[in-house]
Length: 173
Image (tube, rainbow, N blue to C red; front, side, top):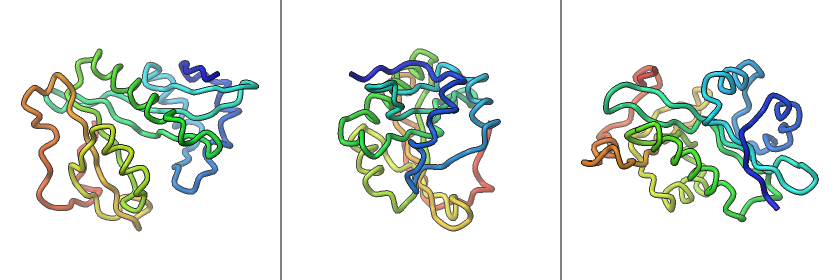
């Protein structure tokens, strides 16, 4: 049985095996702790039999006005637990929390080469908003994908950007 609950400090000592996938970004401990302290509602873990961590989602809410949005910083599932729709459940959880916070959209960045993830996000209703050149370590392009939420009645947040941008053109809050 799978249990999804808020991420806690003790999970930081047990979640490393989930990050073994080469497509998963691994951050330093202070980065995870910052998310845990500032956006605890956006940080969840899925646990399975034997209390094993199956996957997690880490995000935040940011922006102002019509740019107020939920952001998926990381969502990853251990390879042995994939194809069970766990990432879908975690994504829906973050979307629901973003809706409650009256966000206009949810966004995320994904490697342009990660076709399985891109296809999954598209099935969940995300669209490619723009390409960010050399987003990952200055080498690989990233895709900024978005899904409009109910607050964005006119779906302005998902109108695709006409040209690629560079990382220094991104707006951060």
